[in-house]
Length: 527
Image 1: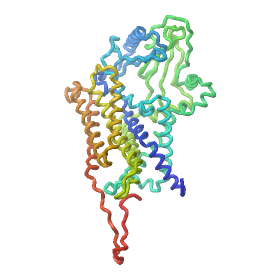
Image 2: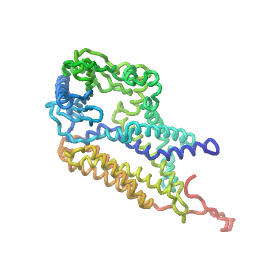
Image 3: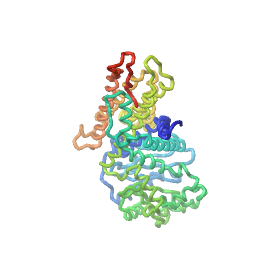
Image 4: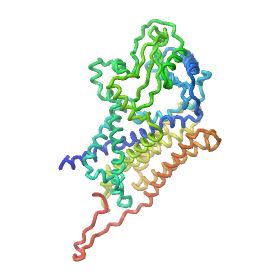
């Protein structure tokens, strides 16, 4: 860094944003979509529909059916996870790990009969949610990469604040008819400044939610690497119990569920059964977080043999733990009502636009003069820009499209949806390497428009209970399809703008008292 402080900050802002810009765009886009994670999951399982909340006795009976199934199909698993039926997902969601090196088990059951439910295999919105902070990599590497990028984004935000002398005026400045660099710079400033509090909050809280992962040394030193004791002392989980290695007859789960439901007013989300059949077996009932910003899940732990109440956790947290859950709640916005959730979503889109315009600005500022060829690094950056800004939305659209077009009984169907996502993204990133810059942008944006429209068409044609095909259907399909059609229109307009753009002619300023030899050209772009 050279020059004065502000110039140093401008250098830092430019290069910190470019180095991680493509990863940040992917993190911002999938994180923004995750605000509607549950709705996306429900849209991707159209056969489920909505159901009324289940009463305590019905939940108790459904839990007994789940335990019966697990006792038959996963008797050696140390831990069973039972997702209880919810209005938006009225099935039993069973998950277990049989042992080291063995694939985990996952199945959906009909809560009324205990039979396997006919639900298509899909990750739904959970794939986008986990991609947001793991990039579909091994959790250790994915979380570290995203964490480093988030820390660099904080640097870019702070340095951007220092660089902008006219930070408030930039909110009201957008010159769309000027040279591309000026228009993109104005769009970058408007998107960055208008939602600046959101950008700072979401980046900081995103790092804090994984603070113990990035900085585990305090827990390691104080608890001798026993993170479970740390989480238990923070009242986030019940105190773990070691297996007694003595067999014991487990208590029926139904009565424990009925007692837990009577103790907590929130909906029961899941059951966790640990060391089933052991003398130290534990049954933990986990409830939805109460209304509020903090993401506190009330948990009730029972002895799995005697049925005695062991602990109630997640109700009265200590100040440090409460602060952490509040920051986590701010990041995930589970507390948000529909209008506030929409505002979070729009701010997330502005974060995507800020990152996208930032990485495009870097290449615009380094375009070669007429008669000069683009250097290899610039061509690579331009291709990566297209592959990120247009390629990732195209990949998400292909992910949704695969959900509708793949056979419902295809083995490994969820993995095929994810493969379709990455295949589309790889194609979208490679094609721009062989196409001229403007044509690559035009074709990429047009492809996204076509794919989004195809998603809405496939939804209408393949879902018999679609409200436009049957009166009284779930309105979620109409809202989702409307959003895809709106996205298609926006990308189509962008593609048309790129295709029809004509660079402004270079104008000359002529002095009345000066001969033509002294005419000086006026730059048409950039400060």
